[in-house]
Length: 79
Length: 206
Ligand SMILES: [Zn+2]
Image (cartoon, rainbow over all chains, first blue to last red; front, top):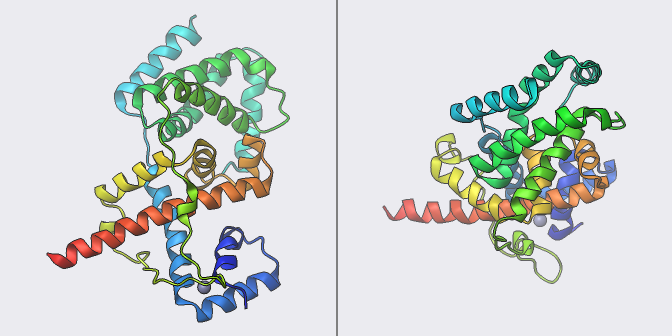
């Protein structure tokens, strides 16, 4: 059985789906007997998810949009 | 992630821009301004810096479009220009105190097994996962990431680009992208875990 440390080292590849079927199977075997690694896996995945949802919501604020349009007009469209 | 269609649209726009059609630039401006701004803002967390970077990148696209060879995707080129301009901004600032990423790993015993309880906060309610306080914790933790890890995390996990695309933009091998991504995620997970554990203790005392 692979140990927790190996398991955690492989998490990124596991989610990318790039592990060999054998390695993926031994990882899943490990998860069956190791609640701490399951918690680790779930929180690892959730970390990506909430960071994406939190940080990808960046929109250009209205005053900046106005500045950018002005900039393009003055420096690019009619330099 | 850019679809084949988006890639073809970009190629047409680039060709038209090289032929001097201003409408093509306007379209590129519409398509890319938010991407440029968001990446730069997430790297600098500063509205003024992100605005400067966006202006600079738009100007570079306009002036240097003839030097764009089309060897990699146009979007990769735009991301690269954006990152270079962002790095210049960051250079002029006081160096942040970066942390050692080793702290992202749990404690193992000599056989490599975890020897402490790992709390699973992943099924917390959305009102906790997406609270303003959690957002603050995420922003602070991301700011502590060293630049190399931060940029990979932003492109792969926040922008949602593929690992291959990130490698193309940063000129890194796939294993290098994955190892940086993994270290960033481990560090952020640890920070979030500390926060959610502390949150739980705090609310149970009420
Ligand atoms: Zn384990």
